[in-house]
Length: 101
View 1 (cartoon, one colour):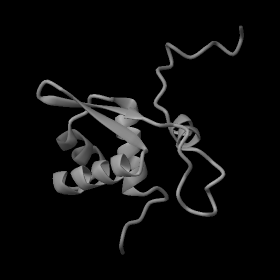
View 2 (view 1 turned 30 degrees about the vertical axis):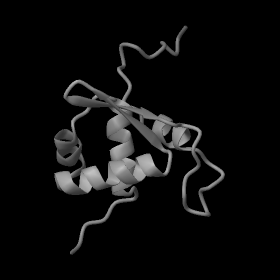
View 3 (view 1 turned 180 degrees about the vertical axis):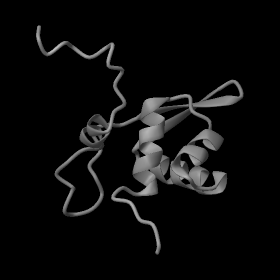
């Protein structure tokens, strides 16, 4: 039985970059479960489409996302990637406000 997910590899790569703007491609690939070549191709596609910017810092890259960019599928195009990333953001419970306050 083939495995499938609700989110694409492109969305998973965006989430990795959102969690750590200085993430290495090899770490993105490992987290997403794809090859380094596939991760590099996805980052390039996202960059070409304006969803992220890549800046070289010494031997490493740093990424900056454009949260105002729309999702690409016509059914989702009235939503922005910032909304998607906010939904799946990894929050530190120590940093979350106390609901009792």
